[in-house]
Length: 45
Image (cartoon, rainbow, N blue to C red; front, side, top):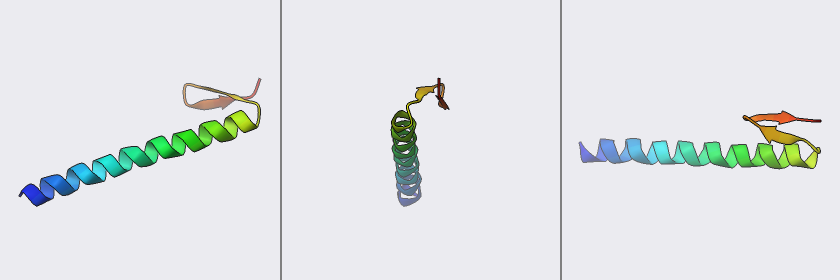
């Protein structure tokens, strides 16, 4: 039972790390295009 719980926690941690990594990449790409990240969207003003 503990192995199942540990696996679920590790999958959740990996998923959250992937989300943070992807958001960072999108923010860098937005900044490179001269935009501003606001509320998860890239605004090119």
